[in-house]
Image 1: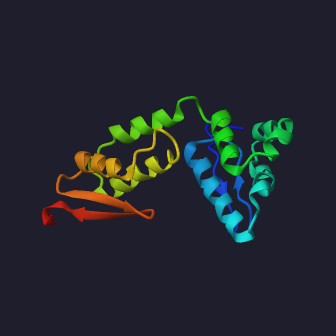
Image 2: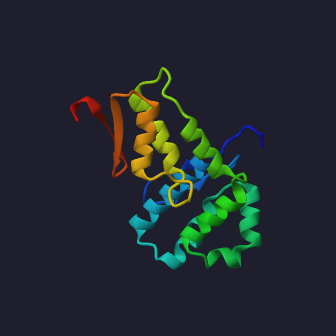
Length: 169
């Protein structure tokens, strides 16, 4: 396996469990895989106590599979949220959430369109959802406003980014 290969999530349909391909596990890849799992659970009405067992084999990296086999009894009884926290703890670099947050807070619009930059910042913040590093919507919006076009800001509601012209207020 090449050191530069990055894992990614694949899912043929929402009614099938997703796969996480072999490679370097990133926060983005795990987030995508988790969202695919959530879709699968909803479409198949998977009971909470069976969720981990239904999707854990979808992680195709041999190292992760070996970790799962070695710890299967403990892992299979975890709730999915606990399992994802454990996967992040074991397979993402130490301090990954702080790295994402620093990158997000240091981000500048530069020559990009405001909407492109705002979506990028919010996407990074989404990776931190449920963690102490996650910026609440209000702070995230102010951060984007301060570092982007002074007359525009974005609002995040129900996962959708919308631009707002500050001159109208």
